[in-house]
Image (cartoon, rainbow, N blue to C red; front, side):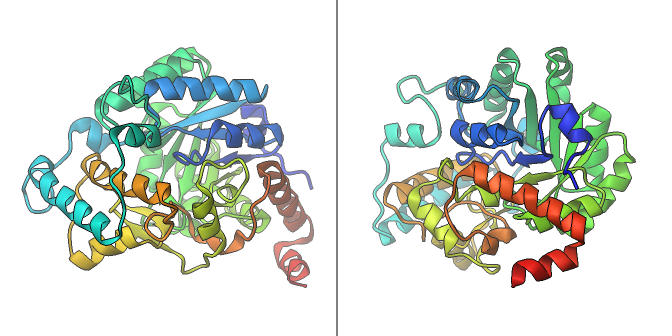
Length: 384
């Protein structure tokens, strides 16, 4: 049976599979490859400074004549102002302690502190101009949104938080707006804000995710929105079986990340791609050590060091300022044991580095086959 839902007509795509907008990994090359194969490629621009974001949007347009999207973060906690840590002490006051911890960790791991230029480049910022406000601040998010609106992108996805303050201007551009949620209350909030598509991303997913598992979350979000907008399933979906399961739960497509990390077009370093291939169903952990919010990532020495020290990570954006020099240094040194990147629990289904278009087509074909013959029969066939 053909894998087609109303999401295809809304987005102008052939198959209702969207590339999750994974920061740093979902490059223009990866987004364009997914769009060119019939899905919707989404640029992962979470840490992109405004000028880098503008360049990425234009680069994507040069690589595909098909619809694509841009994903940024809009966390309400940051836009309201970071709260005090659990100790009651302000994050600013605790920042020196955490930076000392990071410096001691890097010394133990024989990692060299990156230069300001290297840090800026790793964050997607112009080192000569500093490219606008500090990363992951309220001002930074607002500057990104100005670029999204000025460039009139076809699709915008809020990977975290609500796009409500920008909805009127996005709609004036005929931009289709997507919001990623991890709870039914958040689904109702973004629905009332006027978003066009909701992604229900469960605890299984890579990066920032929910406390509710994917299988439980999808049907509850579907019920909560009551057909007013389509719901996409996300979290641990890495092949056609997962897409078919999401559709059976009421979703009208899938938002997929981890399966596209181990592709030629992914922005991950080679050492990180190899770490993905070595992973399995026990290969991830949820930690606040990188961004300050709970995020699923491959097991790594940086997150373990925080846990072993019993140190409470700072809230976003403060923790990012602590972790970024460590993760940038680890990638530069080829140390995937220190920082391999974010990934979901579908990790064990990723077994080779391939072109993104082939991954998209195989997932779509697998979903069609599973739905046509029945998922149990399909699973028995591929197990042979």
